Image (cartoon, rainbow, N blue to C red; front, side, top):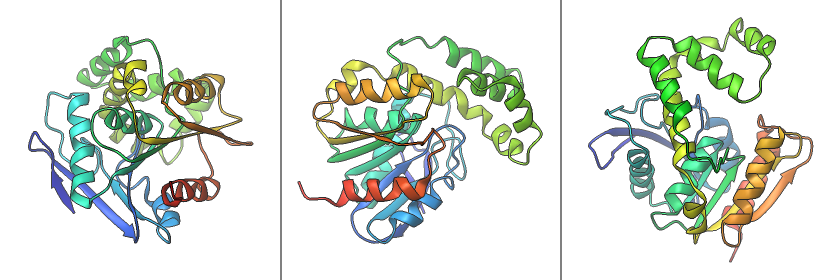
Length: 250
């Protein structure tokens, strides 16, 4: 299925399950299919809506890129399915929060949004320069390195079967970095939606600190740290918490 965003860009989405519709927002390297497994686990209790952010999967990529356009994309998908609830993973969590600060959203849940109080767009610009120069591998390596991943681990990933997927989506990395740069404390403080922030207790300190800061800044937000979990969270543990949050009564 497709819906049309405010600037005319076609945004692709799919649904599974029944009940309250919840739009699932992917992070870096998500392509519209990435949230499928989580959606299947949520389907017995919710209508899970997975969509391809612009530049990914079957969605369009009207240029120039703008975070405002991404907010409009998510808003268009919500309108198409009648959703007022959003779940976001990583940078998709920041996009979900930014959207909730601008348009009516009843509930928003996020997993480890990489919030950074520094509004610098320098890294996003560096990544855009790499893509413009055709250095997609360099952009992927720079992103993975920025997460604290050791060079040897990056080299191992480079030799794995998943590397072509990362290279294929490398042009969207500046988009994710721009979302991080443009989501600020004032945005979080404006959110009136009921908010759940999830994080992994075994994740890198900068991610756990970011989750705590988001939870402390969004009015009334609840924070749950999952024991032994990292950024690569076990969705079998995650799904019940997300489903409970979106189905529990006020």
